[in-house]
Amino acid sequence: MSRHVNSREAVVTVEPDQSTPSRTPSCPTDPETAFAELVSLHPEAVRCPYPTFALLREQAPVHWSDALGAFVVSRHDDIVEVLRDPGIFSSRLQSGASSVTGLAQRLVDDTRTSAPLRAQALRRLEINRDPALLNADPPLHIRQRKLVSQAFTPRRVAQLEPEVRQVAGELLGALKSRSSFDFVTSYAMPLPMTIIARMLGVPEERLDDFKRWSDAFTQGVGANDLSEGQVSDLFESVDEFYDYFTDQIERRRVAAQDDLLTDLVTARLPGDRPLTVHEMLQMLVVFLVGGNETTTNLLTAMTHRLLSDAELEQRVRQDESLIPAFAEEMLRLESPVQGLFRTATCDAEVAGVPIPGGSMVWLAYAAGNRDEALTSAPDELHLDTERPLRHLAFGRGVHTCLGAAIARLEARVGIEMLLRHYPALRLAADAGLRMHRSFVLHGIASLPVVVGNLTAAGNTSLG
Image (cartoon, rainbow, N blue to C red; front, side, top):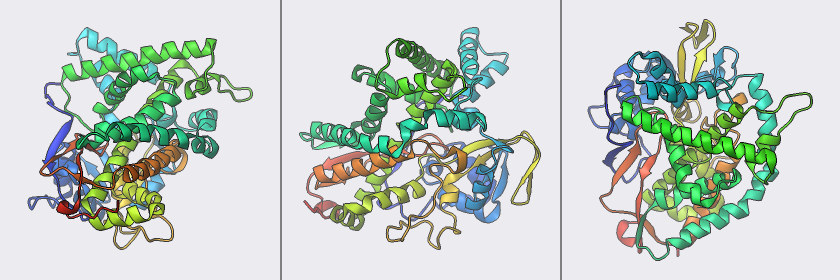
């Protein structure tokens, strides 16, 4: 692993309105060339991958990509077909070769890997031998989901709303004296991170570590060019996560607390064994990343869109009941998870294209979300439909995201509280829009905003 990445972020120019996908005039017209740009993390392709996805849907809806080493499925109904057949299309390696587990396997297979790094990688593979939730297939997945589903019932989620409001109010209150701030680091990141940390019983003084651990698990996803030093640092943070929560699991066995971690430790089904420590650790990774990174990206995308569209902002400020529909549309248009992998367990076929057994398949959720089969204007924001347009941002079928209701709650309350606290907010002038360096996890890494009169920016304050 010789190539080196200086940053997890790519810097591109802010565009005032991203309602219509656009790329530079040199955007490739060949599907493989265009998709290879995305996989290689070309900044413009990462910022706006949607012309590439449209090209795939039109010319090669089930496309073998040499750049990815996988079949790319880009049409909505074809993606759903694959998701509904976990027996043929396994979830065992959902994040692909660039996940922490995928990196670990590559290092173990590479004879040039140093002994310390190999040891770190082997620990990850040992823990991953007990797959959980995201990486588990039925019937194991069904058993695990039943064991933890009580923590995510509508009643339990509804009970979280006062706490989400409290955390949002505290974060916004701490910003009142500032004339500008980074929306991501000051609000979009700490809001969901604090909520999931509290659910897991993580004390406030460990929140910085909690965020660092989350970053470690997502750093390699969709980024194939990490240096050996970066991977070693990543694994060190992962080991800290494992060590901390292994200790906390044992503490919960001795003294139960009112938190999600205790729910995992005490979860039982009649006649069935409890969850293993490795299963719990894997679940905690899912809760950590799913309860933090993706919601942060959703909140940021919603805010960027509002502050880029004066008419939309005015409309949402005047009618807060539109916020849930707005969240659904931003999940569709700027899906925080652009796609996940499946592995063919046998020879199969998708839309008439043969898929040899053992092949990796990348389900491009973000492409399916903008399929013309859903609406005649798939790239536009739709707030007036009787029902929200279908989207794949939370998956479909047995692997529908367990925490989807919490993400929706945080998005609704987070935007509602933001607009109430700030009747005048605008994007900082001439700020570069930094995107996460990943073709899988899509999001704005930094969003500088300015507090004050919005008239000069072309927006209208309703305060």
